[in-house]
Image 1 (cartoon, rainbow, N blue to C red):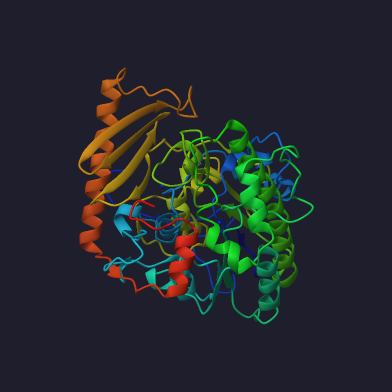
Image 2: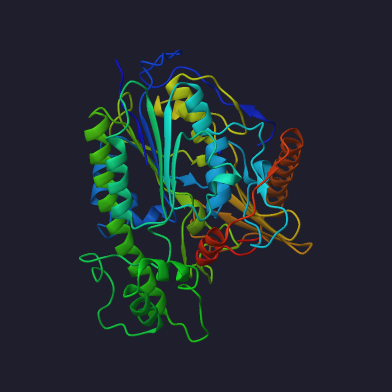
Length: 472
């Protein structure tokens, strides 16, 4: 008997994903037993802006409701603070430095694409018998970089979230139920410039605010979608006279956007269950967060601070415990081996093991978790967290800067302990060195390919999102 799975968008030596017995499952799966899967990525959604993650505002009633009936991972680390490498790590189980799929300058001659010898999640599922489809906002997810591999049907274009959900609804009516079905759904809705519709607009923002962000918002809100799309990357540009009130307005506007997105996520889940069956497993994740001047920056470029790497991850459905909160840190890089293990599918080569044992109540020793953004030639940011300590290393034009934070006492990363704890710094830097060396070995085994030159439309989309340089 088939059931349904809905998925909404972690040291040392090379590991293999362990495909064993899944929660409530068996070590072997027939095609008749494989569940439907909906993988939904809510781009740029930081965990602490959801009510179920402790936000003081009720921004996410539908997601909260879903989380209460399943598993919520309390500390989840994104592989990167950029859409492209973070998603590819989730799709492959490899670090950004290992798969090397990263943003490059728009006119760059060489545009890395995923190695043909590294399988992706949709390819593995199609090989297992799935019919596959994707609905994405494209931008940082160009099909030619490897994101199109394994999909029978693709709709890669930006559109308003409610209209994208409606398009999924229409498409689902055409999909037969004779085969298991995998759908990847991605939206930039919570990405700048945060333009929530009524009645969400004005829910949290100060009605008396009349600063620069209101001017920018007013100019964009009244224009056609094709026009303000070009301004997404520019909306958060700072200026010398920017005040706390300006930052607060942008932050509150973001919360309004989160609330609007939550409504549509609930609608999507309802539609999927209606069309594919009530027995649904739902998994929610985001590829990275967003900064509101916690470290003197807005948006999500050029660093790996906590506000950019801590993201939500929620799983709900058959065979999974209800009301479980997993405190142990996990990484999105481990989601692929976890899914394969849960589905009873063969393991593939990855850098991280499955975290499925955490759902079965097992005690798993804490292992280092890594994130990376940038490239090896000009500007690279790396981080590792283990035993409550987090180390960030920035390499810029040959100059190296290292920071150390105690997450148990300083989760906001405000106090740098680099000078006070040299032994810990050396230990953490050694971990970063080892992981970088591992990435070099993996790239030698799986050399990246080359992405097709971006079309004019794709370049405009990437530029509009603010992704115009090697480090972004």
